[in-house]
Image 1 (cartoon, rainbow, N blue to C red):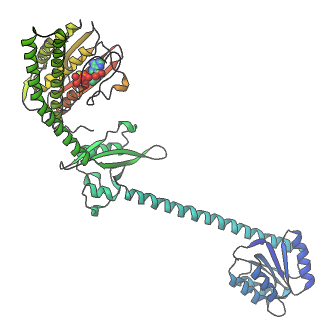
Image 2 (image 1 turned 45 degrees about the horizontal axis):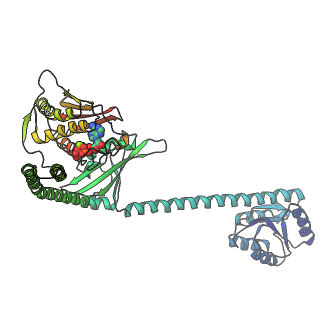
Length: 503
Ligand code: ATP
Ligand code: MG
């Protein structure tokens, strides 16, 4: 029995009138009152009932009060014992208090005296029980917190992705086992050192430092980063600031995912594409030439329908050859082997040639095409001629293709800092914003009423972007539906030493 009931009281006294008197007073105070004429009888009741308070006469025949008190104290139930003593036995009272009695009442006592002491004892039990409950509750919350903490750390330690956390100064405060294992870091290094002791990639270190210092407010602005370990392992790293309650930055959390297999597959895919396109190109060209010869030599002997069919076949093979050529270009760019022959190029001259070449095509659509270049020649840039032709050929062809009859194409070139800036602008169909980030993806074409009948494969812009990225340049597009589109290209005069563009 471990619960004390502050409302249950026992009066142990050999004098019956005193027992009855006390019972009357206490019952009116809403106590449940037990009575016992001897110590033994009292202890028996206490064994069975959760009495909170004992009124104990010290001078009784049989077991003396002091012994009863000792037995109650030995139970360690927190029972409150108020001893009743005669005038002459003040020493007894003191001794009883030493053993653990709560208070004493000298005999004979006034009802009020009893009421005050007993009600104080009752309050004291209630207060203690309240405090015990609070302490218990607090103990539980602390225990919960502890299990919650260990649960989270168990989860972090079992994650299949590497996780690293730094504080605002870039000091590493947490690393999970996968991180050590993925980056081949000796786990003996532990935590507490600066981030550059764990990672070599300067760009990634700078990114973590910038985030830790609170540079990024918008998560969407934080670039992902591709971590390359000796060209053998590749990881996609994503970082986020850790924000406190008042939105202050507390550090950075970095998550790394092993993308080596995806990379290897991607390479295989590019190789496969290069091989297939290469294998297809020459037989296709042969078919095309032979068709051309047949059309030429037999045109007089053939029915008009047959002639039409052959002409269509010839046209289609030409389309195929061009697609295969694009695929080949793209796979070369992806394999980073496109830039082969670097020669000084006058971009203004190159643009003049392309514009002149494509003018006939624009004129068949009754479009005007103009080129604006500075009076003095632009500085020459080191680049591969074919790939540069491919960039502007694609952009200007697109402008012509995706602009209505009678439209206007404006090509211009000038200097912007250390870059040559080329703009290809049209007042054509425009591109809806939902397509904007996709048009640079392979085979992506916008399909609507205006573009449905325009042939193409959706490889032009990926080729353009691939080439520009490979020389550390920049391409941007602005467009408004039915108003037109402007592509702006920045070509650096000098290729930067490191061109590891964030993914
Ligand atoms: P090709 O591989 O023959 O170039 P394509 O022109 O369709 O085919 P991209 O050059 O990659 O492929 O262009 C992708 C899409 O972007 C186009 O299908 C077109 O919808 C849109 N686009 C490109 N340039 C413009 C432009 N100047 N105006 C409007 N839409 C454009
Ligand atoms: Mg195109």
